[in-house]
Length: 217
Image (cartoon, rainbow, N blue to C red; front, side):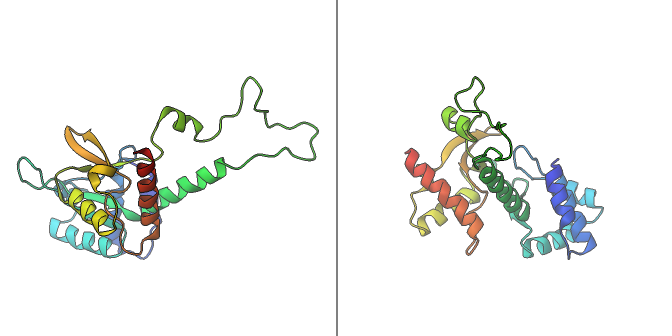
């Protein structure tokens, strides 16, 4: 459960009441730690107290409005469809924007107040120096952003490969890191699906990631 995601859903305006209920319950199933949101349709319909056919009508409307995106993947071993993964597009953009704002605020140099004879900002040569934001992450090799696991065999990886090729970028196996998620091999990518045409926020996230990966190679 992600309180930030449910708060975002509540703030959305102009939706039909039933569609907003669906969006709220989707956000309630969003995992704030992993970024995953993949409730089964039967459970989601039960939560929303509506039939699956009615549920899908509202999901179609939410997707048309650009609030969510559905990602369908197939189990490589059984060839059966896995539970649909849902991307809360507006929430992820808002979270990315908040991260950029916090980073920019954290990087501002604090200046002593001219009206005070002594500054409350500690000097860098004291016993307890102020740590530069982000410095520890760079030194320890910690990831700069949360990455999304995309199954190696599935439509998600195929869509990414096609987008990278179409955009004249290196192939996915040269850029993305290989990992394991829920016992399955995955690619770690900056967003769940390739950037949509004209979406500057998503394109900016991906282009920065590509540049970082090129420098790391």
